[in-house]
Length: 178
Image (cartoon, rainbow, N blue to C red; front, side):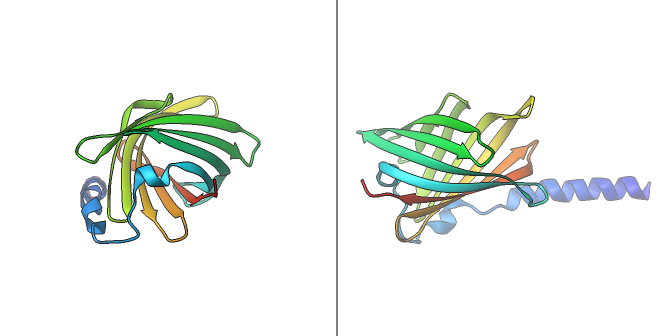
């Protein structure tokens, strides 16, 4: 009985800890300012890693991106080159909404990605069917990006299944000359 109570208490603490994450408003007075339209215009080079739940790097990749906007609608084309030889392309259509938030769609995103920026930070939420070997997992992404100096943007993505972080992705982006 003691073991069952301990497991239930531990499970409750884990679920409760997810309620105390930081919010985007924490970054409202930080600089440099994260302007999604300005940053995702033109060429961007990125380097990334994926870590499993133990923190081990399980995948490395480079990304070449190209973005352009017409009014409040942007297109971001991403070309992924994984170190294991796989290549992938994703094309985002991003819409800036009247309230300053953003919505994004891509062929492998379920429904829509939603995001907003405040100060130096950007936060996106979306769901993706992620193929791993012969299996596809429906994963919830919690993306956090922070604008840095020199055209650098750091992205941390927390990949979650049933509310539990199963892996993390780190991506360093840098604007390139046109």
